Image (cartoon, rainbow, N blue to C red):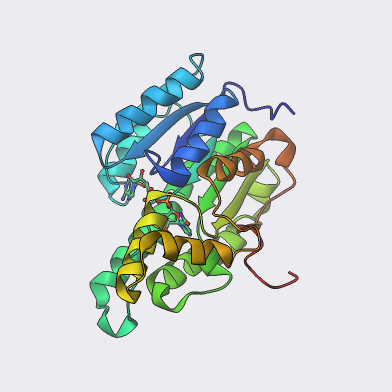
Length: 262
Ligand code: NAD
């Protein structure tokens, strides 16, 4: 199916690796010009090169910077001639015990996983509405639907974003102007972050890393971790011209791990 995205411009945040990169890849394959961001220049440039090889007909721009800072966001927005598609993403907060977290830990989590996406939405959606097309996809987490105790910072900050988006997406000035805002909730996806988390867990329990990974994936009905490519493909579908009646939703991608009927 042609997703009707050829020639659009997307800002894909935190996209040198993992899920953000998967989203950029799918959009580029659909003929979307992209601005990708990350903090580390070398990995970001390598990803930009790979995207240009994937589709030489699109413009791929790489902006080095921390998307959780005003400067990082301003640089990313300045590089994008117009933002038709906004993919909000950033690193997740560290695990831990809430008894150890101080105000600054909470503020960092809120900045990265709630306030940064809100700032970028604020900077882009009214122009999308004026043009009659816009797609915002926020990469959140399965932990919004089924909170994980050690990920309290993530549970809290991402739930704040989820509540905000639920109200915003339903504004007639956006939904009625073909601007959709949805959240994609990853379960366990095979990225650097997941591998690091498994290694930390394995070290704590005295298990070897391969054993810990096998145990974790065996608990998922799909019997495997997701891939960044399949995450990106769903993201591109949410951004498609055909998905204009799909807004304000939380879409769980977890290989069946969430046990509820709804
Ligand atoms: P990853 O570590 O593999 O990749 C993260 C990417 O974000 C990298 O390109 C990194 O350079 C970039 N990045 C991180 N912080 C940034 C910042 N402040 N500014 C700009 N770029 C930044 O991580 P991932 O697995 O792709 O995860 C992406 C998001 O999805 C994270 O918020 C993570 O918590 C969440 N998540 C991931 C999983 C999973 O299983 N992988 C599950 C649930 C939630």
